[in-house]
Amino acid sequence: MDNQHDPFLDPSPPPRVASWRETAAGILALAPALFIGQLGWVGMKVTDTALLGHVGTHALAAASLSDLWTMASGVLIQGRVLGIFVGNAVGAAKAGTAPWQLAGEWLQVSVAVLGAISCFVMGLWAATGPVLRLTRADAALIPDASYFSLVLLACIPARVLFSQLQQYLSAQRIVKPAAAVALVGLAANLLLGYLLVLGVPTGPSRFGGYGFPACPIVTSAVEWLQLLALAGLFCLCLGYGRQGWPQAVGWCGVSPAFVTKSRVREYLKLYVPAALSIASDFWRMSAVGAFAASLSTLDLAVFTASYRVMWISLVLTGSLTGGVGIKVAQALGAGP
Image (cartoon, rainbow, N blue to C red; front, side, top):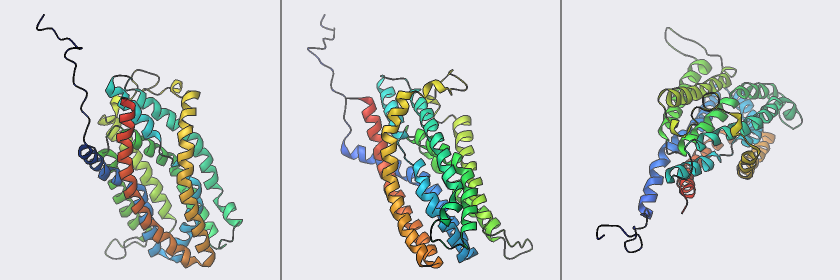
């Protein structure tokens, strides 16, 4: 009897709560990889701006004019709320109150919702030319701006899927694969863009490059390559995120049964406010860009170049808040 454990006389100690130093260290440990992972797409836009600046003012202004519309409408697919649902699922799974596969189910819900929104956004991008003709934009820039939007339209599915897969992994504190892919993609965009847009100016392999038309093609191709690397190499081959993926359900774990009305409703409750919150920032900057475009072609090009630099600083702060979001989502999912 003396060796028996009585929970009333000898209660178990409460679970240990991490100190603020440990919590801060955990957030800072996630932030660099999150920053690099999110920098990939922004970095490619900076690279495109630099390359087109060397092509000429007309090329940079046309791409900038395209961006005014595509950024204002493309923000509708940039509400990053999947990490909240996956983080909650992971926290609950670690606490033993929910199955791990719930994380993968929410990924499929997010892809289904964003797939529908993406079709609408692709339609908006396809209408870049007619929309710009309704404004006071320089008529000489509109054909090239429309071409730029139409080519980049092809990478919207890749951009959405990469973003959702990145959030799915990072919510499980798997942040290195997306960071590695982003770095490789950024380097590939720079190298291919330099060779195909600007060409090789000297040497036996001298080549003049294809100029402005090649720039959006390179960017679209690199975005698809990034998706194939993250999904094919890291997830399918190396098994990252496999623990949270549904097993033996549907086709390779994919099933429309996961996309229920109640889940879509709960997802939209968070997604719509998040997307509109981000949209307000982009719409304000698009309004400033439209004013710059009304002044001159050069003013529009200068505005775009400076805005890219400011965008990088926003990614830095966003990586810190992303680390906080991962911690909070998992903690809430685990419960008290």
